[in-house]
Length: 449
Length: 142
Image 1 (cartoon, chains in turn purple, orange):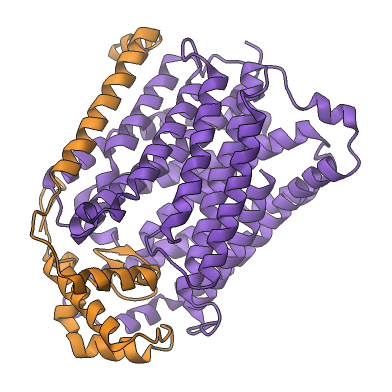
Image 2 (cartoon, rainbow over the protein chains, first blue to last red; image 1 turned 180 degrees about the horizontal axis):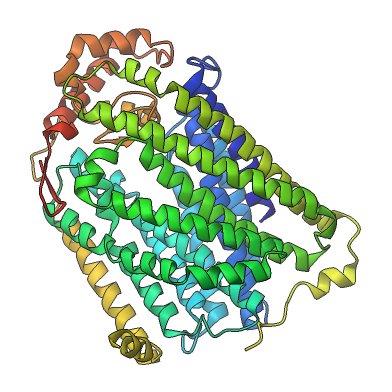
């Protein structure tokens, strides 16, 4: 979790640098041009999500089973592998050495240690869980996330074989099949952990064993497996892929409908628990789930996707999902885990509260500015008398300036939130926490039935 | 009513396992079917195209440019740029860079390989959304 948060903190700096390169053409071009900055940002924040999710699963798995994980050695090896791989990846970007695949832009050789590290995670997880019988929904979600991440990660490297690589349409079809499902995999890890946290806060396991929890889980799994085609509606690939994806994506309306139906009770629950820092982030994520899902459903209709595809509306969706949902849920989990492991956050409540509101308001402005930029680009893409690309970029400038300002305040807000978390953990490991307290914290009691 | 029935039956371990296994089997079958019947069946591409693709990846062009609307947002979509702008225009950009795009110091043979790749990409289809037909049921046709 500490490594993950350091990656988040540095990843945001790369994000801001990239944002500045949009509004100040040629900014740092000689030293760190955009083709270096973008992967530095993307990989840092993607590994924040992945490492954060792994940390959440390992911690909550121990709390769920009431015993230590199967192998601490595997865990340590896995962590070392990831730290060395991520360091190597970031250095390779800085040196301009790329594999050049979107999102996984590092040389493919780094994929091998990551896959090995993930296999250790899988073994550790399966051995620690034992049987799936009578397990709550979050254990199912964790297992799904761990298994499918490995599958899709390996699938995303099929391009190294000429059979898949030689034709661009074939290559992109398989590439986006893997990416679409991969995002669903880490969502499973994070959403599963947040369900565990909700059970913990409400001191009940009724939801995680309920039928509706499993219906929603299977809806999510169904989408993870088959809705990836909405990324490639405009690619001249098989038509059946697009039709399947369109139909499957519409099942998310059921999830959206349930959020609206439950809105009132969600609101009263939020009022009741809002004094808990962890809960505040869960509540914020709830709002972002609604907004992001709404946008995702619209974008999954091919006739609408034609307008939004390739525009900043897609980026707005991604930012809503990775910041508003994934990052907020991981921060909620981090506050829960860290407050138990060393010191309480009482003395930091004011600064965290300030950070929370700055982050949320900034994210909304950030999101709206991207949608605004996206609408202008969409109009340009469909215009019959198209002005040059550079002129269209000039029209986006006010929105992009707003985007950078909101990005800067959002980063500041995030730092207000991360600082107490990091300080807490560093003090815990290297400072004043007593040995007894540390030992107590290795295993927590399972959540009461 | 039907939701209540589904909800109750979902509590059964047996049903959960049946649903999970069925979904996984369908997913694996779907994946395998796709791998074995990829959308485009054509003969081998030239070495120049493959070399061009390799340079495209090593220079991380996708960070700024898009292909079929997927990729970065700083530069234009390059799917059909070969037809729209022509090789001379592309060569000039590659040789000089722009205020935003760095000069990649590519050799002549590397520029030729990139041009071959962009030509091959151009021939794969149309990415311009204005060329799509939107049907009343929300689907699109290329």
